[in-house]
Amino acid sequence: MGKRKRENVKAEGEFDLNLKNPKTVHLQGNQKKLIVVLSGAQLETVKVGNTFELLNCDDHLQILRKFNRDPGSCRPDITHQSLLMLMDSPLNRAGLLQVFIHTEKNVLIEVNPQTRIPRTFKRFAGIMVQLLHKFAVKANESSTKLLHVIKNPITDHLPVGSKKIAMSFSSKIVKNCRELVPTKDEAIVLIVGAFAHGHLNLDYTEDSISVSNYPLSAALTCAKLCSAFEETLVNGNQRCQTRQGKEGVCIDFRSCPRSYVTYRGGNYPILCSNTENSYVCCPVNVESSLPQQYPTYIRPSQRICHEYSRLATRVTNSAGLSLGNMKTNKIETPNCELSISLIVGGEKAKAGEFPHMAVLGWQGERGYEFRCGASLISDQFVLTAAHCQFWRKESPVIVRLGDQNLKSRADGLHEVDVAIERFIPHEFYNSASKKNDIAVVKMRYRIQRWQPNIRPACLYSQYQLPTSSAVATGFGTTGFASETSDELLKIQLPIVNSRQCGEIAIDHTQICAGGEFEKDTCSGDSGGPLQINVPHNKCAFYIIGITSFGEAYCGFAPAVYTRVSAYVDWIEQKVWGSDF
Image (cartoon, rainbow, N blue to C red; front, side):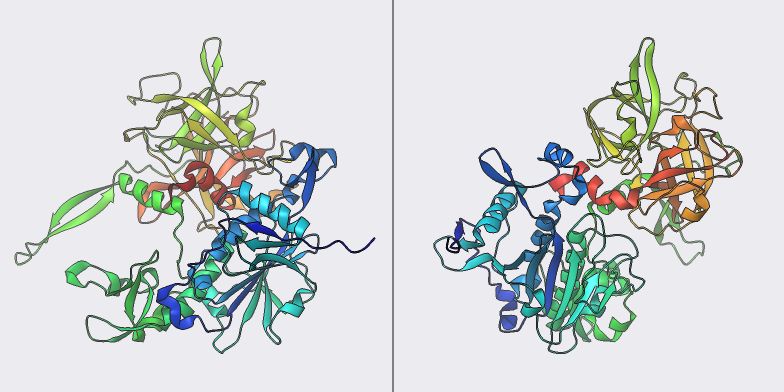
């Protein structure tokens, strides 16, 4: 038999003929500055009936279990999300980006910079199946290849002498993305792992680095890289003049010192563009004083957090003390009753002290039975543990908000019971190992008006914790084999590292806390929050952990909490979706 002829398939509507950006036309003749290789991409097909489909953990879970394969090893959605970030970037539109995909099965794919990646995963999967079987995807009514399989090795397609660096959170070298931008007329090759678990093990890279102090998804890594290159190579080429007549450079307004972008006193900055990221004219003589971390992306949860934090403060007018100063200043002060220091072994929380505290209720013979804690994080969702989905084979039916005492009305609070519409556990929750022990619960109705005792908390998104202790709250048992508490309890716990966690093996998605005599959370605290507050606003809480599991003899060994920062991407997708 002769060799099978490679066929091409056309992708209707996925070729952007109007890709050129008039604002960056002066860069179109430049060579590629950033080459990204999505390595280890989990792209393979499986036959279902008479058709082939892109193997993924959502649609083919039974097939994966049949062949004893880890669902986490079939995540083509990671490649899809990363490609959306890369191909939609202004850096790509400026003609300065080239992308390759190197699959786990050693298939090498070149992506045409003019390719418009399908927005839906279903359509993306269909095109990937055609690509893997036909070896090329062409634009509609054109001979231009949008995606096509090329010969290995990858090094044959990279510029001679270019730096090749792998992105890895485990690397001891942490760099700001801007440090990677070439200063000379050369390109740099950055390899990003397009898989959920594991490490890059490549023989053609010179080094491995991390661009953050905490784990990032592949898509977010790509976004940070593109933003840094864009600011330097695209917008950074634009010189400008400030309102004060000083020489400046156009950069993201969040990277310019606050004194130059404040609107007080009429000191309005000159806008260089009105694009998705607003660039302002920043004086060049202060560019060296820019912070080491350039916040080029604000997470949806951070934007929401800023809004919720304002609920925890009240604005008061304060006049100057001197006779000559009659100017009134607005001062923000905490809008809550600050608690006294926590007592060893836990104590009763004050009414409304933890307004984000929630509890899940099961239908019992004599009313609701409350068995798991939770945290209010939006007007319709609470955060809890995945293992709270079932108790005695039944699921919770209501979320109670704003309560201090589950069986008494003497606390003077107006609690709210909201029916549960859907319990959403993490797709890869493992009940045996308690890995990915996280879930969000969607309430049937939105909270229309906040109360002093009902207010959401923020999500802590950074891996490194700013403190050595945190506060746990819940209606759990006060000791081994004791009854659950009707009143909300609080306790301050020391955060310990994995070596101090005893025989409990934890990874970067978990936190170990407690372990001092009579200082721990007990079984009834499952799903409840481990939280900290911020120095400038003691009334605003950040959730850093979710109570997962610990020793049966609570109070004698550390407990394990699901680390929230490891799942912020997942939480944002489930709670806010495409709202941002």
